[in-house]
Length: 96
Image 1: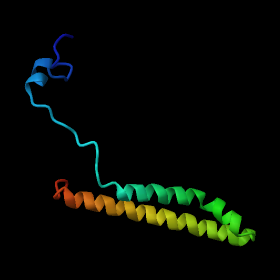
Image 2 (image 1 turned 90 degrees about the vertical axis):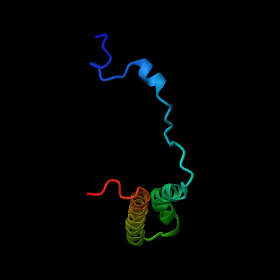
Image 3 (image 1 turned 45 degrees about the vertical axis):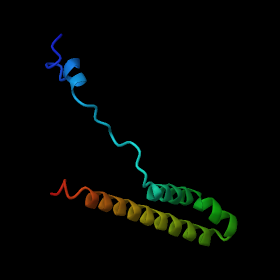
Image 4 (image 1 turned 180 degrees about the vertical axis):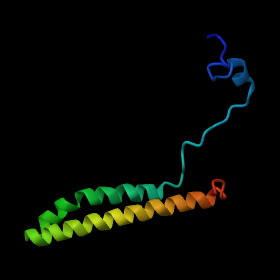
């Protein structure tokens, strides 16, 4: 098939005539995503840290469960906050 329109692509001459559009790859406000990364890392390491300081098996298990629930809730809160902020910055383009 030599016809590029049939294949779903534009001919190369059309692409060369149009101005180049840049995609925003770098986002300078990545502070919350870094916070989310560290939160998840702490959540994964919390059983090891708790195991070093708490020797009673029942208390260790209870603290581990609380740490897992707390990090999951905080991570979900950060994600929800980020999505809400993106929707507000977008001006409601995708309102349903």
